[in-house]
Amino acid sequence: MKRLASMAFAAASVLSLQGCAGWQSALDPKGPAASELAWLIWFFTGLCAVVWVLVMIALAAPVLMRPPRRTEPLVLDAGADHRKLRVVAIAVGLTAAILVGLTLLSFFANRTLAAIGSDAALTIRVTGHQWWWEVRYEDATPSRILTTANEIHIPAGEPVRLLLTSTDVIHSFWVPSLAGKLDLIPGHINVLDIKADKPGTYRGQCAEFCGAQHANMGTFIIAEPRAKFDAWWNDQLQPAAPPTGDEAKAGADLFLKRPCVMCHKIGGTPAGGTVAPDLTHVASRRTLAAGSLTMSRGNLAAWIADPQGIKPGSHMPVVELNGDELNAIVAYLEGLK
Amino acid sequence: MRLGFATLLSVTLALAACQREERDTRPQSSLGSGGQPTPVTALEPGGQRPSPRDNKAASFEANAFHLSEGKRLFGWFNCSGCHANGGGGMGPALMDQKWIYGSSMESIHATIRDGRPNGMPSFRNMIPDDQIWELAAFVRSLSGNAPSSAAPQRNDGMMPHPSENRMPDAATLGKSP
Image (tube, rainbow over all chains, first blue to last red):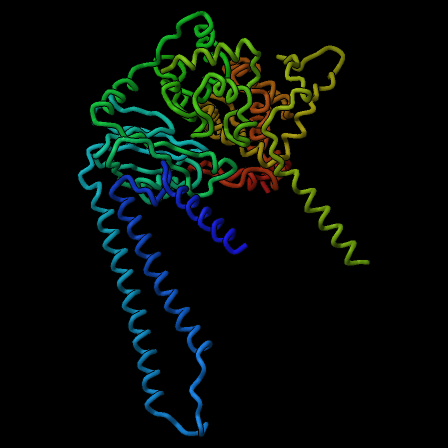
C-alpha cells in the first residue's frame, strides 16, 4: 500500500513538472526577462524551502527530545538561558539578513528587466478589447503602419517595445515564456519590453479578469528570423486578396451587405470598421476569436453561425444568414490569406 | 413565522431583480415579427389605428444588459455622427421630449430599421434585429424613458450630459421645476 502511494506520488510529480514545459510557462523561459524571473522563482522557492525545513526541525526537536532531568526545579541555570538567548538572536539576525538579501535580489532583477528594451527598434501598440487583442505596428512612414489582431509577430533575438492600453476595462498582457505580466489600462499607456531568444510560438493570456470571456482571450507571440518577419510585414500591408470563384465573389458582396461590414475592416474594400478585429488577412492567422478556435473552414463557419454558443457574451452578434450565404462568406474569408 | 415571511419576501424581491441583468445574447426568432410595415405618416382616415406592438419590446426595455449594449453600439455605429451623443446636430436631438415618429420602442425600432425621410438611413440587414432593439431601448433612455435601475450608469468618454440613469424623468423633462 505504502509502495503504491509512493509510486503515485512520483508519477504525479513527474506529470506536474512536465506541465511546466511548453509554449506557455514561466518555468520554461525563452527570453531574458523570463529567464531572470524563472531564476528568481527557483531561488526564492529553494531558499524558503530550506528555511521551512529548518524551522520545522527546530520546532520538532524540543517536542521530541526528553528534557534534562533537574534535581532542584527552582535552581536557575544562567548559562543555559544565555545559550538559548544567543540562538534566538542568531535566528532573528539570519531572518533579517535573508529578507534583506531577497529584497536586494528582486531589486537587481528589476533593473535587468528595465534594461532589456532600452534600445528597441520596433514598437507595437497592443490594445485590449473585450475579448481580443488589437495589434498595431508603429512606423515613421504612415503607409507602413499595420493593424492586425490577436497574433503578434516579432523578430527573434531583438528587443521589442510593447505599448499597452485598453478601450473598455482593465486587461493584463501575460506571455509567461517571455516576460512578466503588465496591465492594459483604459486611457493610460504601459510599456513592456520583450525579447525572444529563439524563433518559436509563445502563447499569452489575459491575466486580469475582464468579463465573461476572460478565459478565451488568448494571444500568440510568433518570433521569426528578421528576414521572415520583414516579409510577413510586407505581406500584411497588402490589401486583401480579391475573391476568386463565384462563391467567394458572392461572399465578398454579402460581406458588404450584411452586418459584418458595420464592425470589421477588410483592406482594399469599403469595409472599414475599426471596433472588431481587422480581417484583411484573417486566413493567415492560426486561430479565430482570440485563440478560441483553430483556423479552418469549418471553424470559420461555426464562429459566424453561432458566436454566442462558442464564446457566450462576446460582442460578435448572431447574424441571420441562410446556408448559402454562410458558405459564400466563409469561402470569401478563407481566401483572405 | 414572521421571520420566515420576511425571508421569503426578501428572496422573492431579490430574485425579481435578476431580470434586470438577464443576458439574452442569442436572438429568439419566434419572438418579434421584425417585418412590420412602417407608416410614413400617422395621418389616417377614421381616426387612429392602434399602433403596432411587438413582443420583443418589453423584454429589451427594462434590461440593464441590453441598455448598456445599446449604448456601446450607439458609439460603435457612429450614431453620434448626426445625433451627437443625443444632443442633436445634423439629426434631431434624442435627449429632449420631442418625438417626430413616436416614442414607443416599436417606432424607434422601425426608424432605425427602415430609415425616415430627410436623412435617417435604413439599417435593415446591416444591424441584426436584436441589436436594433438594444439601440431603441438605449435611445429611449436618453430622455429618461428607461427605469433608472436599468439605465446605463457610466460614461466611458466625455459626455454632454450625466449618465442615463441620472437623466431627468420623462414626465418632468423640458419643464422648469
